[in-house]
Image 1 (spheres, rainbow, N blue to C red):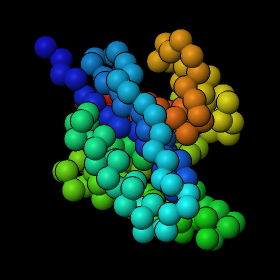
Image 2 (cartoon, rainbow, N blue to C red):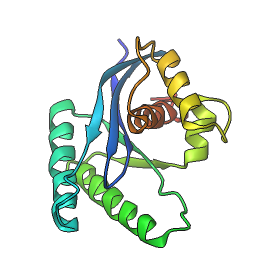
Image 3 (cartoon, rainbow, N blue to C red):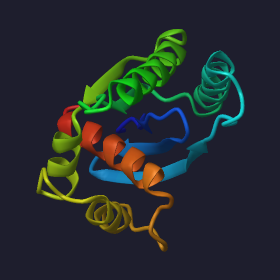
Length: 162
């Protein structure tokens, strides 16, 4: 009997963090759940990070993924944006590590290459391919969700031996 491997794909962000939970059994992949975590914009940075931590911890407790696939922090011309994104990503990684869930980073180009076949694909192409691969009735929205599902798919594609 083949075992089910559950992965949570995460597109980190301080304003919106997308997540997608996928089950893989043999060659089959199915969507379990997806959505966003949106910390209140008017809150202080520490409270927004706490919000991210609490909500990611709840998802990890509820769905019990075996691994987390998270998008690598892209290099930004805006240093402040990159630092804020790094803090959000750090909190998400800590939520997983606190539960003994291993995390793997994937560069945006690698995710696009894995899902679309083109490392320079735009977000709408990624969204379209995620919908096709996962046989979803509707395109996953917002784009943070389709990106998170794509990150999960990339992880599954990289780890075919699981």
